[in-house]
Length: 76
Image 1: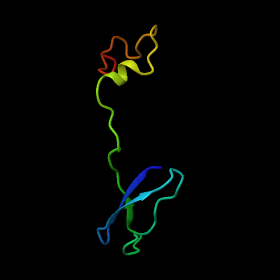
Image 2 (image 1 turned 135 degrees about the vertical axis):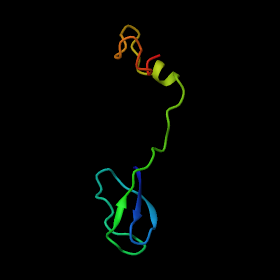
Image 3 (image 1 turned 90 degrees about the horizontal axis):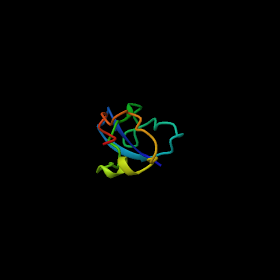
């Protein structure tokens, strides 16, 4: 389940909530009860690093790259 960050515009408190994708957004600030509680955009909790992931995973040995000659930078 993803963790969503919320911030209250009224009191300035910021909290994290563990929610299912299908759950409705949290409507009220748990600190002050205000309805000015909004979900924030934040970075993902993981990063794909290195060049091996794109070059070796899910690659068919006889197929062409979808970007032609590799000019997109992701195919190498």
